[in-house]
Amino acid sequence: MGSPLPLYLQIQQHLLERIHTGDWPAHHQIPPEEQLARDFGVSRMTANKAIRDLVQQGYLTRQPGLGTFVTDRKAESSLVEVHNIAEEVRGRGHAYSNDVQRAESIAADDEVALRLGVRLGTRVFHTRIVHRENGVPIQLEDRFVNPRWVPGYLETDFSRHTPNEILVAACPITDIEHVVEAILVDAATAACLESDHAQPCLSMTRRTWSGEHLISYARLIHPGDRYKLRSSVHRNNG
Image (tube, rainbow, N blue to C red; front, side, top):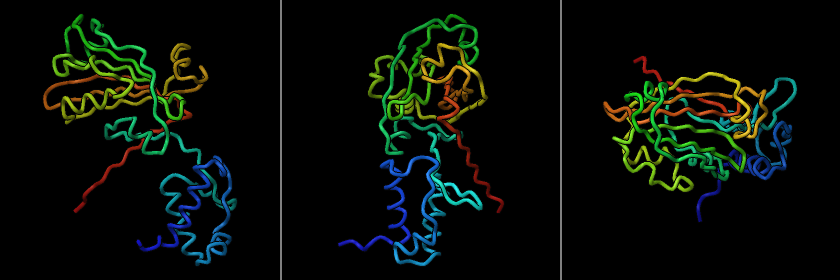
């Protein structure tokens, strides 16, 4: 038999179970430290550690003078790395699905030619996919790929594999460029995201390189009330 979980982890497990089952929805106030300490027969310091860790992980938020509440956990993505969105969603214990709207070869217009570093009118691969978390749209991905570097891109079953998976498998990503801004989208885009037309969205343009080769240019749009971007920078001052 394995050793029992430390007491603070037992408390965390209990709290997370209540959150994941929906017993404690977003903005629900959890029991205070004193009550958790009594219920589990531990010190207040142990209960405090359990809560503090879940605050750091984004499950709970403290409001001074009021108490501790369940957060409205928006989908979160790193701003300094490129992850497979399907893995991100599943990593949160949620169901991933998508709607493939386009998978085609098109002639590059002025913007795509400039962003992808090809001549105007060059044939490029284009996919347009709505990514969903528990059935709710969290990202509209409009991606353009240089066929020279990923010739088999359009042969992918995008209902089973995300564009990110295909690009990483074909060309190890060495460099990334991100530009993020808040925008209001048109009615068609809002309909794709099943969001209010007046709801601000996060727009991110991303270009990826493999060595000296510019592989892909993507426009990623996220409903502002369902998504957040995170950036972590580690500095070595030694």
